[in-house]
Amino acid sequence: MMDVNFVGGGRTEITVDSGAEESVCPWGWGKQFGCRRSGEEMNLRNASGGLIPHWGSRDVLVKSLF
Image (cartoon, rainbow, N blue to C red; front, side, top):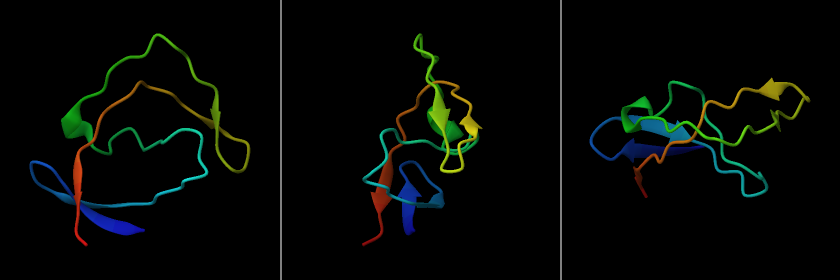
């Protein structure tokens, strides 16, 4: 895990997984950057095989603290 600052204010932690096919986050994480609906429905699954809901996409801007 790595501490980062949201551009525009606020601090959070992120985990980088370079082996992941897609980057995902909880619905409320980075909500200040908005969410764009996607015309493409994605079938995402977690490591246990459970479904991860797909709400759309967002571009979240952060600054690394190191």
